[in-house]
Image (cartoon, rainbow, N blue to C red; front, side, top):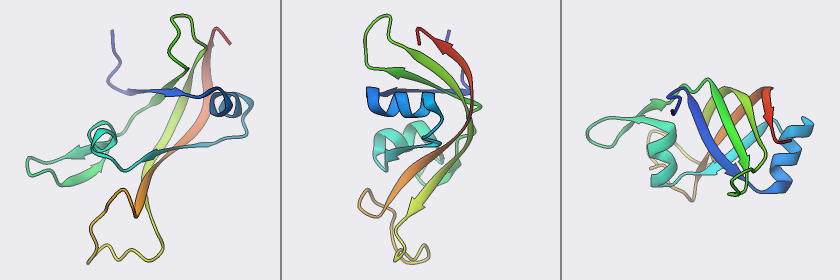
Length: 112
């Protein structure tokens, strides 16, 4: 059963290992329709109201059936913009912003 307070993301080995070692404390995703739907609260007009409040992120290394996984605290999801973006005038696009998922402690390791 899916946990609505848990975000599920697949990672390449390098990034999985860095999070597991504690050297990578943020994960990034592009500002695309796919991740806007997964990471944001959106109104009926498609306007972003806020980012979702996930409690944890379940990371999996690759797509194998028995792939290593870990569950990590999700402290915050931010929308980071380029320095020259004026939020009163400019539209947010995949060219001028991205999502930053701020990570906390590793809570569980599976097949690691």
